[in-house]
Image 1 (cartoon, rainbow, N blue to C red):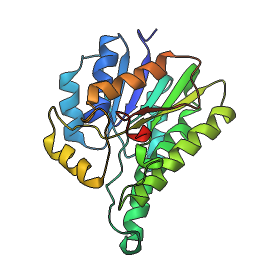
Image 2: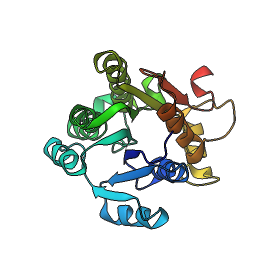
Image 3: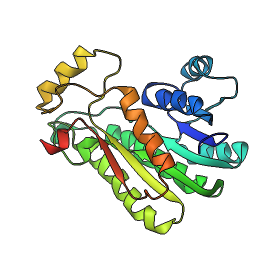
Image 4: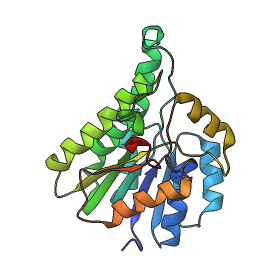
Length: 234
């Protein structure tokens, strides 16, 4: 089902995005890796096949997004794993400029990709965005992250009706490790007051499989897939 498909992965040069690219390559797809940092993009290309295309792009720059789609032309699916600059701290002492930058990066970046990708996506294609469990679970100092992720999930629900029969979904990761046995992040998560029924962080590979599921399940649209180890249930 994925063999030969041109799949754009924005944020695909590292982390979960790179794991998605690796799994797609094994499935016979043709990933188009998009990232903000030239060095990371070059490193990612070395880990993948020679068929992988790479592009440097800041998705929050709308004009650059328009030019990007003009350059790559038609594609089958688009996945965004964009992360925003982390903003934490008490709400009353937050920097409005920092909050706007975070919103520009993750919400408006993904908004731009869908808006301008519509002209180039093939029939039966899909968009998969990324939110995060702060959309529905409160943690001290995470009000900005909650607002951004909530906006993304609302956008997905609304567009699933508006752009049908094209599909749009989102993956909502919980606390995911940066590398195997990431004890430092686990300690930080525990300090936030998280309650992980599985008693561990998720792996990047485990999270990547959720995106592949949404690519292949043609009856999924408007769905938010939680990959959180049961955190939202506890």
